[in-house]
Image (cartoon, rainbow, N blue to C red; front, side, top):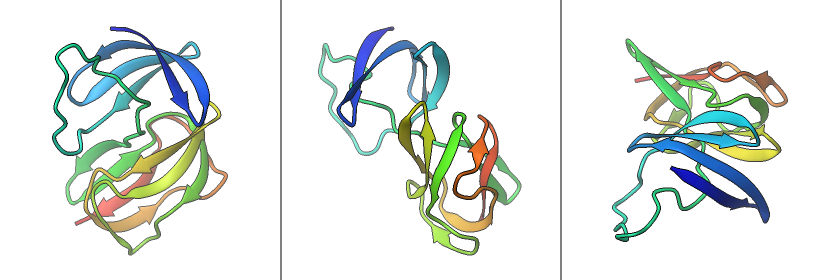
Length: 139
């Protein structure tokens, strides 16, 4: 797809966008490949010659539903800086649930679900791997 410079908190990052579709992009940052899940918020008119990737991606947690418990997985490896929810708390889709540091960048993790927090599996300063279950949400 192309090579881009993303500016995040005043620092430039060279990003190769390998593939992109409506829900995910495959990108390479500093030699590491990531799948970035994304969701469009609101209708944004697209310019005819505009590139699909125009700004740094917000980290959307990977989601998997099993029965009535939905799980939010770590989208990439990193360290938990802040957990913003607790068990029993009601949350809405798109709400920030935690901040992770990955590749020296802070990433907001948003809930892809509305529901009640059943279990928080991580705490501040925990190191997580891509795919680790961060939070479980019930109906």
